[in-house]
Length: 71
Figure 1 (tube, rainbow, N blue to C red):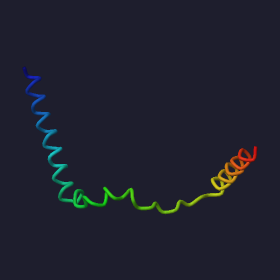
Figure 2 (cartoon, rainbow, N blue to C red):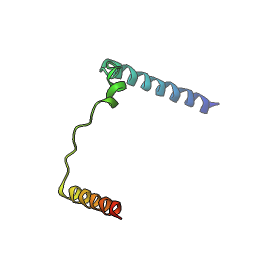
Figure 3 (cartoon, rainbow, N blue to C red):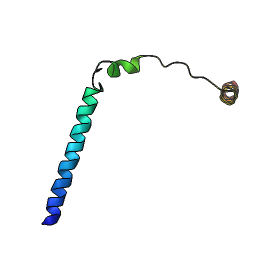
Figure 4 (cartoon, one colour):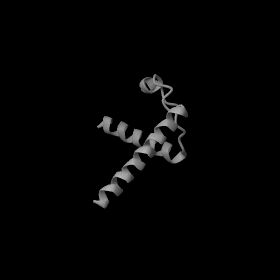
């Protein structure tokens, strides 16, 4: 029976911790912008920087595609 009391006490502590985290996130503005996340996928991504290894790999793959189309 004493284990049940300990578990209830631990559960109350955990619930309090989650309540504190929720109140802190609301006060810090985590839930202020509800519109942007729904339309973020419609925006274009900024261009990625390509290093020399990736550019060489891209050139080789394009050459392979051209070679396969020529057959």
